[in-house]
Length: 421
Image 1: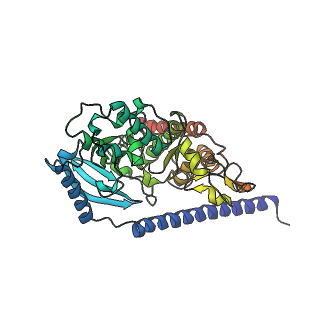
Image 2: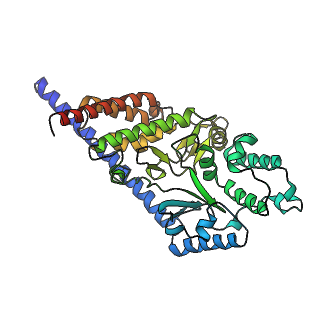
Image 3: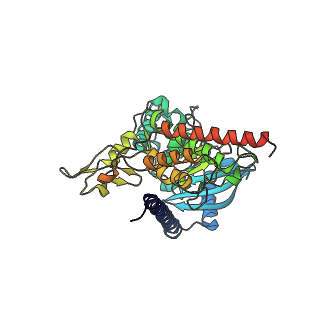
């Protein structure tokens, strides 16, 4: 009969091997899934070429010269050439994303469609007395279009960001037509509406016809060791005295700030249904910014999307937003069961805190607490029952743990400086 101490050591060894095997399986699955997504995007998306992109912008400028469209960036792009094409980034899900240089500053130009004529026109502009259309009626039309895009009832005053009041000029119809093409692009509407309320959303720099410009930020990469290229942040918060682990800690806290704001600070909860590193970027102060919001929905529209016929729970999964099928009536529940926090814990925080990225920078006891919290956060509360319940860990709980980690990292650095390292 084996001594109890030996049995205990054997059990501990088996447990460690089991944990290691589980982590290896998870890492392999993560690499496989992200490799598939990368290949799918590169192979099945429309090919992005310089020739196509230059032709697209040449057509845009031709329409501008013929007074078909307008915008505050058209002169810079088509006349002064202070806004210059540099390269094509990607064409994906019908969206054209192009990098340009604007007065020495890199920017991104976006549009869902190639040509201005591809967008629906506003019928009242074709009427003979369109020039006499009262501004109040125009604002009402804008509010209705925004409601159609966002699924929200907006007052006319809320529509003002999309329409600058001005006296009717000879170009009035062209201005309205250009605005109308932009309002048919969900991401433009989100950016324009939220840019004054959230630091986690890209501001719109300017427009020309159906193209809108936003600041250039490098998106994350699922296969990058730290998901986001921290070396690009040198000289800012991530200074020589700042460790990689500290930077990741601050970025994680910013993700939690974003989740809390999107959940609580607007009139309706904002759901993100396509959460992956590529759809976020990090500013030089380590603020997380959503750079792709094509799959963002406020609560009313989210409910409309989920409220569908079904035969099983899998029919109620809309990308990263899950519901459950009520088989008595074969109808999906209109309420989303998982959350932004849960998906971020699963797709972002797991990679940082359940791998070797954190190293031994924080105490093992605190790291275990963070790892457990991330694991519980990423998994549905009743996952054993095969459903998608809310996370048992709140953003505030994770926030407290990460703040504690930040203090520990700072105290270690202070000790090193004190003893002369």
